[in-house]
Image (cartoon, rainbow, N blue to C red; front, side, top):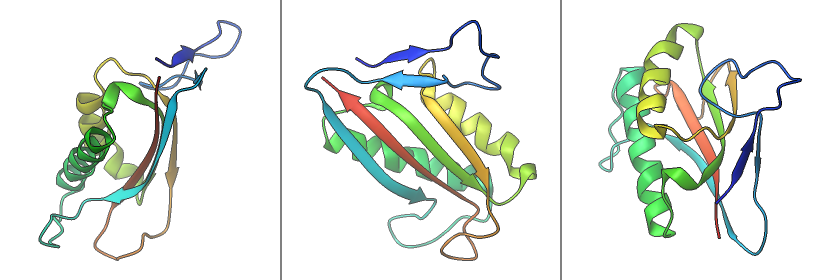
Length: 128
């Protein structure tokens, strides 16, 4: 199980994440490629919230395939097109992560691989 760090001599995290995650020992580490909000049939919802939901559903399925779960995520990188999308993305992210507080980075970008995409997320997970 990863250990998370938020030292008291560093400003508290600005959101639902930890400053650092430590993976020790002979565990398994899974690096998940950036996931986007695309349905299995290739369709893309217009709404950032719906795209975010698909992303986290995909991440959960990928983690499950590796015999892991959301609780094993130690790092999240998120890429959004607009600050206006943060509330919808954040609500979905918080629901999926629950009490898990992985180290996280959020970046606003000018575009993703396809123009209809509004958000992309990649994660690293670790399990003993």
